[in-house]
Length: 235
Image (cartoon, rainbow, N blue to C red; front, side, top):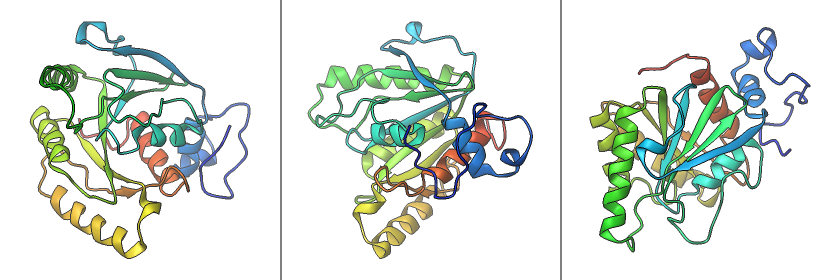
């Protein structure tokens, strides 16, 4: 299994999630061990009455249809094909659930912002997402992925407004950070951070990532692993 954690990480052991020891004191290592667990596809739901039981903490991933959401999910779990990637933005139009070692459920939300989608499809997507956000009590956080080359778009702001209204904590994560210069990344990071500061449900920590180079993946794993253990949750 590919591991995108920073160099020097410990080798995977037969028990990837010890309950005590150094891993508990090292958030990055704890995150690596959690996401090294088996991750399996559970189901895809196109309606609220077809979703799996709400038995484990859930983390959902949202973003524009071409933001690189599938690539980030694959990078987090160290796999190449866990989440389907496609050259056609907006291909996934359902809530896809993945079980991470019986500890955490990852939810791949339908991509938004695809201009060619029929109005009826957009309305169906909106009803599904609004119902999921308001009714899923085990949902710990939504990761809102934003392309670092473009910054926040109106569709991202619409998503964040929906999350604010649903009182669901969300965290903005920049993708494709390897595609721009360090100065450009610093500028977009500051701009996005300033805008989310006024959002009532936005988590203040902003992480820049690259699914190709592994930038920020270890830090994001650590952040999400804390939520799996019930730490730092605001909901």
